[in-house]
Amino acid sequence: MVGVALRLVEDSDLDALFNQMRDPESVWMAAFTARDPDDRQAFDAHMSKLRTSHDITLRAVTRDGHLVGSIGCFVVEGDTEITYWIDRSVWGQGVAGQALALLLDLVKVRPLRARAASDNLGSLRVLRRAGFTTTGTEIAYAAARDAEIEETILRLS
Image (cartoon, rainbow, N blue to C red; front, side, top):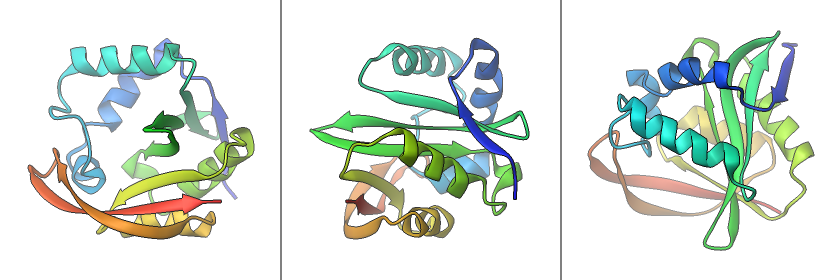
């Protein structure tokens, strides 16, 4: 069992999070990303908004004290959605599932929604193990792939 924990995102996390969120393989898999993952100014502005908004829960994900990603939730069109980004170096090691379980303990709002590219089988598996069920799919533009792709929509009641 890995020692996964959540904590507030700190200024000292931003360089590592920026690098994680521009890893080409991770960006491709996430699909629905910033138009230009290498735009540090846009990243900093986005993170500033996330960290100061009262409507957003954002946490750093650590494993054994080392930063390995971020997780959070936000409201869009009246629905609370979760999102996470886990460093590719720890994929398949249970980190995302444990981080999600911790977030679900922290955020009591239900229902919660989640979305993932339909070919992102790892993320879909994490969400389903946490109790999310598929409610549908839609075709949406994925900036990372510069194409419209299928996105799976999930819900946790």
